[in-house]
Length: 274
Image 1 (cartoon, rainbow, N blue to C red):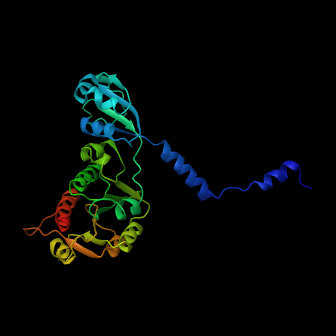
Image 2 (image 1 turned 60 degrees about the vertical axis):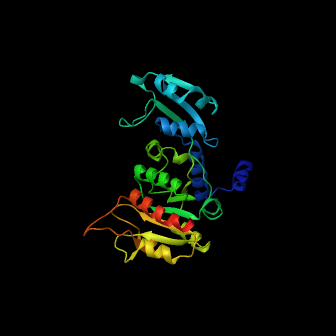
Image 3 (image 1 turned 180 degrees about the horizontal axis):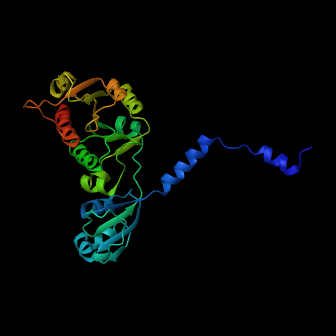
């Protein structure tokens, strides 16, 4: 015969392991913080009202260059640090310029809210396993310049928000939506259902970028899909694109860094909305 305590334990349903894992990941994500560094990145993060700011560390020189109004408007007081003993856990090679800000990552929402129903030109950049933060930072900067609604990348095997990415983006990380999605191909299919034409950049493609863009109707929604240097686009990513296109080069051999290729293709695509 079961005792009272044993019967009570039987009534308590054990959570499935996937539920436990999901809750644990959510708690870990909420606790995650990062350090932005460099005068431009710190200034723009302080000016961003939706960025959660936790700790600001400045040298006296950096504090003078930023100005009191910069952090007072953000509602945070700086810790003034000795430049010879800068008390922030940054990589030794980080050029922090005497300014560092601990923050929570931004939540940019969903593909639906940002890419499909978002404001501005229906132009989106999708990155397939581009892991170098300097490349992603430069792409965010170009995306902002040419009015893209968002840059989309898979949550795994892509560059996360880091100080190095923010510094390369030169403030664009605070203004240009950077969405990390669970599955890139699923996000691409969602965009296609919403009327986007997806152009995959591939050096070996037969078609050139400009003629394909010219064949699209004026104001067409465009998704530019770029892969990591070397591996390029994965097979499923390539298959999900509507067209594979290349940026022609003048000589017998030529290639562009992925951030340069993004800038060129963004410029060419932006002309559809002029």
